[in-house]
Every structure is written in C-alpha cells, then in structure tokens.
Length: 338
Image 1 (cartoon, one colour):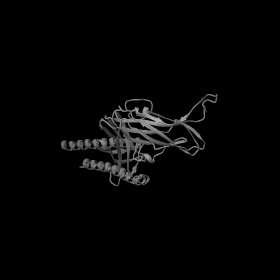
Image 2 (cartoon, rainbow, N blue to C red):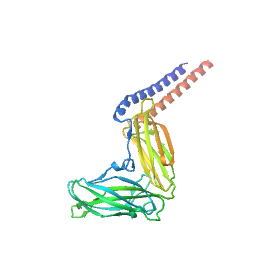
Image 3 (cartoon, one colour):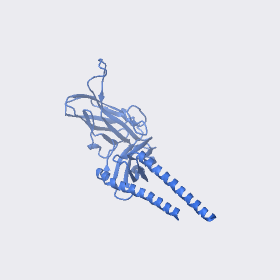
Image 4 (cartoon, one colour):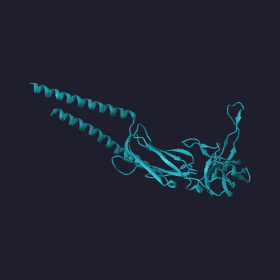
C-alpha cells in the first residue's frame, strides 16, 4: 500500500511538472502572439503576382518591373521596356546587357553565366542602345526587343537584363592599387515559347523538426520540376499552441521552380519563443500540376540546459520509483516469511 502511495505521489509530481510547463507556455503565449501578425503574406523575388508594381533597387540604381513574364510564338518579335531610375545624388552612366538566368543548386543561388537549352533567350534580346547617361533622381526608359527564332523549341526560357554602372575606383590597400566596383540590378525574364512541352513535377518531401533547442520553428519542402517550363509553388507555414488557442503565426509565399531543377524551400517563424509546445503545419501546392500536400507535427522548443535538466529529473524519478517498488516487494516478502 505504501509503495502504491509512493508511486501515486511520484506520478502526481510528473503531472505537476507538465502542468508547470503548460502554465509557463500559456504565460508566454500572449507575449509572442501580440508581437506577430496572425497572417503574413509575402513573396520572394520570384513571386510575379504584382511584377508591374515591383521595383528592384541596388545601390544607386533601381529598375521596374523586377520580373517580366511573357508568352511568345516561334518567329515572334516582342517589344518591351524597362525603366531605370537613378536613386543617387549624382549623375550616372550605365550599360545594359542580357545574360542567362538559372539556379545553381537546391538553395537556388542565381547563376548568370551558365547557358543551357532554357537560357537561349539571352541571345534573342536586342537593345536600341546599350549605354545611357542618367541624371540624379531621373528615370530612363530602356527599350528592348525579344526576337524569337522560327525554329525555337517550345518551353521555358529564362534570362536577366542587367543595368550596370561602375563606381569610382577604390584603393584597396592604400598603395594605389585600385579595383572597379560595379552595381547591377537585373530584370528577370520568364518566357514561355508556345509549342510542344510538358508541365511535370512533384513534391518530393516536407520536413518539420520536432525538437528544437533554439528558435526558430521552421519547415522545409523539396520540390522537383521534371518538365519543360517553370511553375509556381505556393508554400505556407502555420503555428498554433499545443494546449489550444488561436494560431500564433501564419505565412505563405510563392516560389518559381525552373525546369529540370530541384528547389529546397525553407520557411520559419522568426519570433519563435525560447520555450513552447506547438502544432506546426506545412503545406505546398502547385496549381499548374493540380497537386497539394500538407503535413503537421508537434514541435517542442526548449533550451538545451533546461532539456537536460528535464531528462535528468525524469531519470531520477524513474530510479526512485523502481527503488520504492523493490523495497516494497522486499518488505512484503519478509512479512510473508515471518
């Protein structure tokens, strides 16, 4: 009987620890809830939903739009314009040119030098002028022509139009040795050439780590494009407390996935508290492929020192319970012998 009572008291202690943690999580919940919006919609550079309203700015030069998506026929000539603005306080001279655009790895680091079958459009882009002078605060229209060959294959074509200026020479060592530093914002061209091509791809995986020793809560999705043109993957993350209540964070973003590439997309909750127990959901959808998948997982965020203390406490508790049970059995056995 005494052993049973001891076990019950031990279990009560364990439940008390859980209640204490739950109470602490509940106490800090209003703090992070008030610091984050319930929904946050955004996009990276590849989101073209409002491309005409976007302006990409680097140093003193800005361009608009940041992205241009067009559909073209073989043999077609397409005229378009980008606008370059001088945001600096002095006149600038810049040149324009086209280069291939591809992704070099799963992290999608841009590659502006490697040419392949999907970057031929860089050679199809022609300019009326390649050099311009622009006053401080002024805007300059830069016309360009995309001349598609008659024998162009159907599918996606990708390039970037750079507006590049060279700043003053910089003395790197104080010894008269100088280098030229250039700055070049770029307009991304996403073109689809009408013809025979396949839109094909898959959601390879979605991963959510269940135990984190430090923030932030994050998700990871791997998306593969096996087709002949790009598609847009919409990814989202949502977080809600494990012990109930409203969602504390939600965000969605659109990402371009180029043909014959695999893209790793990571999303995180930057304001994740140091301690908490949450239910995290990751969702991915590709409208062009009519596919969508979602996964959810319980995520425990706990600093390493506290996690170690919790583990030690549970081990000691188990040892104590086992010792009490053994002692109870020994007492019972000795009484029976008597």
